Image (cartoon, rainbow, N blue to C red; front, side, top):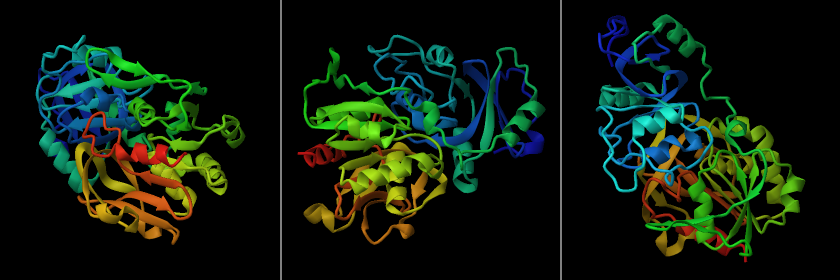
Length: 393
């Protein structure tokens, strides 16, 4: 990245800016919503699915740098939204946003960004920014867009400096739904859209929403379950009153240790009752915390649709060693060195060896760090939904 001292001079045509907490200033062309937003800058290596990425609640309070240079070519549509709550606050792209060219599109990406209050900036050397994140870690910054190019860089810098960062921050409550609801959406098919979930299906899964992606629930339906979704802070007695055959712990943003202050006691109580449990991403981390492990903030995180994960542990039998290509989005991880004796590591990242899956001995409880529902990403890991629903009887 440019030297902080030499990057503050604003180019004549700059309508967008990123101001990092260390004083670095990066100029570009703004698009989408106007104004300013603060967050942690991360990068995503997926080549497709930018709309799903931007609407994933796990990206709350984050600014996504897309390593793929051409963003916008498939436009946006109403079917590829993963959640109607807060997702990423902004994005950084290399080239000017491409005009849409896809038969499913009904809106340009820049227009959709504006309508959803998300700020974008193009014309940035995203390769250099990605290298910076890899070497120095994910920085805090403010992204801003003003069509007239009027920016108070000092004020934006102060805002970036004062933002506390994701560590210690509970964001699940901010993105969780406010009341429980029966999930009605089924799998998507070209030409017909999303199907309807049969309301009389068995078994019944109660899904705790810590900032969930909708495609997770569709995959649970596809695997044969009936799903009821409840807010993050739903009391144990209210969950049990719904008569679950199993409980699902969703993905979500923020520090799992912070969310765990209210989530872990509920999960431990469910484990004590031998309730079958399946957790994804944040849900996986919360399950690990409930089992006695610890989590840690990662240097750069894992975000993309091309992450190789290997099955390990005796539980996988003949498939032990098999590699899945997975979709990931997380900046915290379970510390494998802290796993208790009754918790087996079942998956590991082939990028850095970090934990990507656990199973609790003597319990029908397991979790994975990655996203088996993809959106975007490969479908290698759908078997996990079938495994969970299959153990519910």
